[in-house]
Image 1: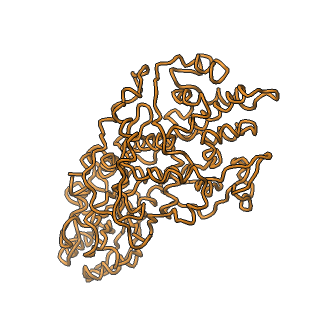
Image 2: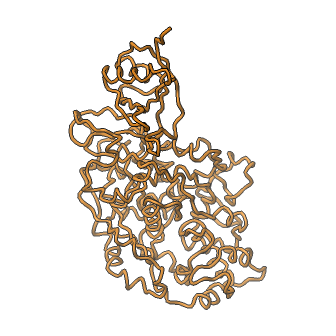
Image 3: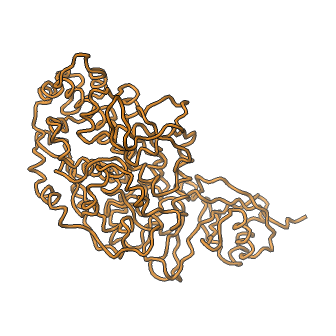
Length: 572
């Protein structure tokens, strides 16, 4: 008896790749459906909507058939009854058991949608149309931006390799704060120096395990050309506001820069009171393990000068463990040590802008084709994502009042954060920055690659309601310590962020919705990507304050270039 129907193996939320045998589908779980040979294209669409669970009101489904041609498989759109008849001719062959289909999504456009096309690097989804609703785009043949006048570096971007079937997978995230804080508790005698220098918020946030797949999914949407993430709902980025509110770092102050032509072992002996061996000091890179081993606890009879040495060592540990981590994950750069010489002057520097510059530089590097790892203040990026998006956000968290590191099985749900009037060892403590609310038990990912695919899909389907443009309400701002909110007048500055050899442009004018302002079409910006070629390799004896003098002058004039616009009528 002749067969009256066919089995169709449906795939979605993966990717189309090419290989020696033509196209194939990867990263998606197949779902078989049984159909009759008399089914129409419209009826098949209804069936696949039911199988996938996608909403007809929000997305259009396109069907791509993995069609056998000669000795390879080619992609053939199934978009009418005639193409379905041709597909079924193949299925009727005695040697064919089923046909494989890939289901692509393109959001339903409305007249009031903005003319912004977001980059969607994995799911074969066509974002909002650039011109008219009638525009027909073949997502398999044209996966990238339709307009290259802004995103001019697409051919170097990580997403380009992914579209070509060369998915590099999950980035390795370099951070050693967990080891440092478990093995190096803050001695109460040096706490006042950490508070005085403005790094107590970083200590209080403590260890938050980095979600590697989430960081990777964000990197895939970062663009060097604009220093923003390009989401389906529009551009967004980490700003000076996020650094101040989440980490409690000062953002209004002198640029973090200086001379790197120093004798580092002599400097350690002067400011740390101990000279490191040559096997732990390479150039300006000092092993964090050496700091932990030698500065765990000050002597009982330590004088003021000795306590300051221990405080500098601990602050260096925070810098190397969370703020300015490098690819080694094991060192801290001593270029910051001279700026810790006088504790009364440490807070004169804009440590927050330096940390943000470092994050921007790492995001730019990691978004390039071929990158496999990322360093920098990844806690800042993760906290930013949790505040603004529900994607990857933990459901349960609890702040801790004492040292942030406790055993994984300890119940912290009833331990309150530091608030006004809280004292530790008889001393009143600063109020916690907002990032402290996210201290919670360790994330465990049994399958990071599967989590990455899930995050990509969630970002592809993101709606306006799923993006919190202004998470820092007036009520939340009012409860924060002074260091988090006193620099509000420069949160929207358009200026270069400086951290010794690193210079990266801060572009809040592209994300005005984050400040409760109407976002018009952004004007052209130049993030000066050529600056990425400048680093300290081969330049160990540079005076970076002189080398980047022009950019430091622009930073010093930050209050003269503030992005603004009309206020929004409502807040989301």
